[in-house]
Length: 85
Image (cartoon, rainbow, N blue to C red):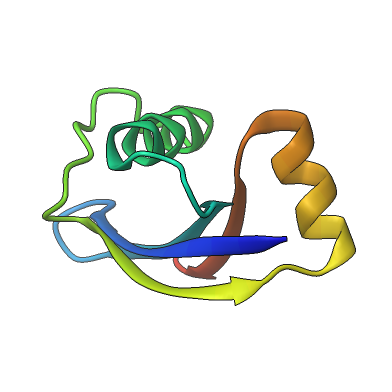
């Protein structure tokens, strides 16, 4: 499965920025990607953050390994936590 990778940077507080990637099926709309990002942020205690294209941008496509494909098939997206998550 080819997936689109969205590079995402969100201010966690005044001095810390969260960096994570959102992986989705290649034909997923940007609006849906932002919805998935907000869902992830809610689980991290940042429920009131309005994720937009300013924080979350398409980066590239890649072929997803099996465990990533399974999670995308189950819930629509996969998160790779990079920094301060």
